Length: 150
Image (cartoon, rainbow, N blue to C red):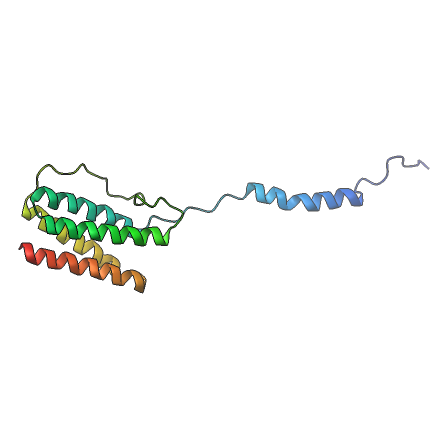
């Protein structure tokens, strides 16, 4: 008989080492979770700021003040929902930021307000109750501004 000089191929130590290192291998290869989708209110923040700039260019200071306030309140909600993001700028949006207009007409302001009213109304139906109240207020504010300017 030939005597074994090295011991068994699978020692208890090797089995335990393999079992202990298996979770580490899985943890190192697991992809990170996907980032959350952009906040739908972020687009409304961008739109409200653009409307305020257009209203300022058109000489409608009350409309500009109201839309600036809308942007501030919507941004506060975006920041509350996603506290880890930057607090001074909205999340990336599908709307490209255009430079502020050098001139505007009351008709352009009314069109922008109607577009904001429609965009907000579309989100109200799917928003949680606490956001639906904010959106409803913004939509109603835009509707009243349209009535004043028309």
